[in-house]
Amino acid sequence: MKQDDSAPVHNDHPSTWNALPAYRGDSQGSGFAVTFNHQYESIDEKAAHTSIKTRQYRAIGIGVVFLLAVLAIGSAISILSQPTSTSMGECGRTPEQARANGCIFDLMMSGWVHPPCYPQELSDQFLRENSFAFFRDREGTQPMPEAEARLGNYKFVYTNGSFHYQHCSYIWAKQLRARTSKPYILDSQSRSVEHVQHCVQRTGSPNVTQYPLQTGTKLSRSTWKIDCIIGDREVHTAH
Image 1 (cartoon, rainbow, N blue to C red):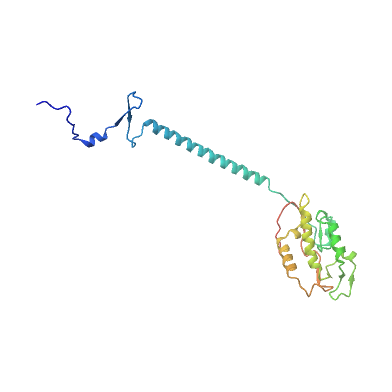
Image 2: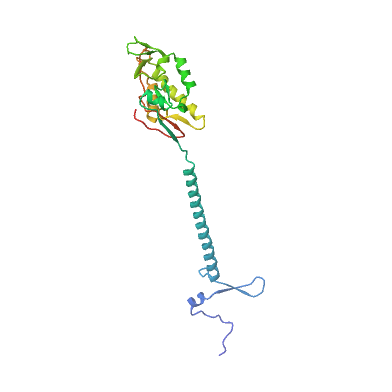
């Protein structure tokens, strides 16, 4: 019996057939092109992906190294550019020691300071505008001329209750004045964080009983150990 060539061919092994690569006709009629299942990847494609990843990792590594270098250079510049300060030291415990060290008595500070830290014009202005009176006793029976008080020979002296508040204003005026000059020169008392905080509290809550008194403020000579500092430096002192 002759087999009919037109009879359909039955696929007895569908799994094997489906595993074979599919063929599609070339639209240009130049032959056949092979299309592989999407789960397969050529060796060339893998190599290309590996190369791309290698370049990416290399670029990331270079970027990290560059960033670390920039940070290191920035830190070095920051350290080198930090402002330095110079201390001229204290003037001494007595008027004799202070004069021997070339210091000047600033009555608005009630202490001896080195000349660079003595804004004489500003100090004179505060003394002139307030017309303070000075006394040897709390009762105000023994006046002391301002010229004598300026010598700084007293251990303590009494003056107007408003002096304490004007002293704080004087410190703030010195801070503003020093910030506009180069180099930055200011005494340790005017730099003291604690002393400035004390002034803020004092002026914010004034003693209305003490303020109008003729002898409401007692000044002690060189109560603070005053240093003259050139350059930026934060100072902390007990008050």
